[in-house]
Image 1 (tube, rainbow, N blue to C red):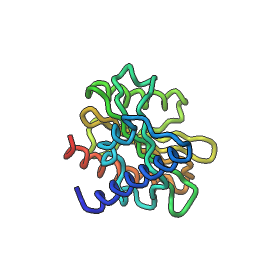
Image 2 (cartoon, rainbow, N blue to C red; image 1 turned 45 degrees about the vertical axis):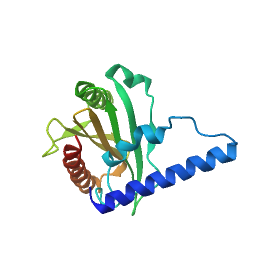
Image 3 (cartoon, one colour; image 1 turned 90 degrees about the vertical axis):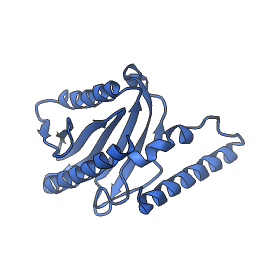
Image 4 (spheres, rainbow, N blue to C red; image 1 turned 90 degrees about the horizontal axis):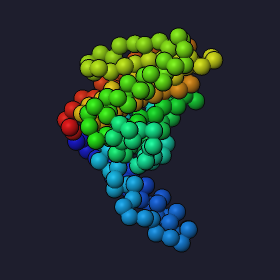
Length: 193
């Protein structure tokens, strides 16, 4: 693991713990054990790193997801959702990882994500994501903007990267940046499995 990534993990954990401590102190209660931070701590290295998605930065701690009823049929264990903001526009992005009890569960959920996009109609445009086996990339128009997403799995982990609010003039460049970020995350995930 590179030093820059270690620093990000340490900062995220410290900030999250400080925020949890402040909230618990203000409420006069202690956080329950075990907390979401300890359950999802191994996932922090499975979201985008500082420079993976050029022009975007993390605005807050990744949000821990420890219960998702709609995913439990596939063996969902826990997950993280990291919101990202663009440094130059109002475009938003997300890096999402979910851990399942089996690789089959992760693949089913990844396929379900694509299926949900297809329900939005014929306007969904698929694109190839080179260097990531069994991945899927797609764009979903919504008025004057669109959402670009890339999904893939690695072992028991399902990954979804999204950029929302993409204007037509920026779509090709942002799709290329998202693809490069997905490839970097995929290669890093292979060393962690």
